Amino acid sequence: MNNDMGYILRLWASLVAQTALDLAALSTEHSQYKDWWWKVQIGKCYYRLGLYREAEKQFKSALKQQEMVDTFLYLAKVYISLDQPLTALNLFKQGLDKFPGEVTLLCGIARIYEEMNNISSATEYYKEVLKQDNTHVEAIACIGSNHFYTDQPEVALRFYRRLLQMGVYNCQLFNNLGLCCFYAQQYDMTLTSFERALSLAENEEEVADVWYNLGHVAVGTGDTNLAHQCFRLALVSNNQHAEAYNNLAVLEMRRGHVEQAKALLQTASSLAPHMYEPHFNFATISDKIGDLQRSYAAAKKSEAAFPDHVDTQHLIKQLEQHFAML
Ligand SMILES: *[C@@H]1O[C@H](CO)[C@@H](O)[C@H](O)[C@H]1NC(C)=O
Picture 1 (cartoon, helix red, strand yellow):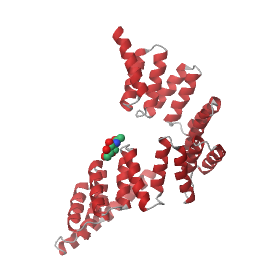
Picture 2 (cartoon, helix red, strand yellow; picture 1 turned 60 degrees about the vertical axis):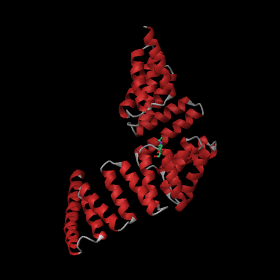
Picture 3 (spheres, protein in one colour; picture 1 turned 45 degrees about the vertical axis):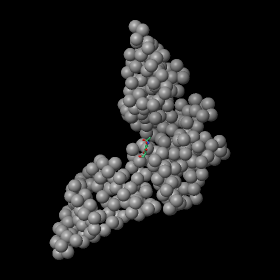
Picture 4 (cartoon, helix red, strand yellow; picture 1 turned 90 degrees about the vertical axis):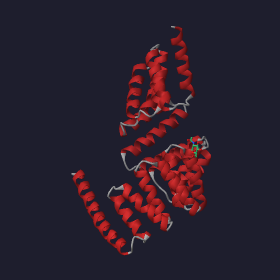
């Protein structure tokens, strides 16, 4: 039912684009193909129709006549759709040379770096964004979480509070705020933040994420029974939550429930093969119970997911030395 609806809407959009395309082509003819504005319009139509190479030609030609911020943005969108993030990146930088400090271009660069998992470069560009516009929600949120993950929760807290002052008021913000408060040792604020996050949750996935963070707080306070319950509750709300399976496995491991832990880790790694933790934990358990072949295979998967993980490298080396002695 919903699918049918989507199909009709898309078809309609593409019909409108086709008509606009005819119109625009007609007008360009009359202005002897010199009007950059019409080229941008045609480019947009091509883009809507999914004709990215045609769109690229139009935007490039328009940029030759007249450099405009919007045209840079459209052309970059084409490259992103063509899965050429590096070309888009260079284009944004070219645009910045022409329009220094332009927020939309800076943001475009930051998003690509974020997508490429290059958080340090993304943060640099988001900082530039904040210099121009200190109310930019996306930039504040990204810089805040970067401070959190580089072990500066009290700095992250400042950024999240700033979002609150600006009137951002949702589950995700309070969920982040709760964890930040905990790690910044502002315990009075921790639980109220999580309570508010739960009350603002709009779907089961958000509820799961709050229970997941609460599980971390419980682990941090050493209450493993509570942590166990929190991670279980996260899975009740979202049974695809790979991180919760992984953390639950670690708790089961500590209780000596090897088979349960292994089953949980297998679920985690099948849900999120890109995560190194389930592979590494599986390798560690297998090593402990003397299943060295499986341990080695899992450690290799962990290495593929996170080549610089020191403990994985250590385990692999140890296993290889062992195999060499056989
Ligand atoms: C991030 O990007 C910058 C600039 O392109 C590069 O110098 C740096 O090595 C990258 N860092 C990572 C972690 O990929």
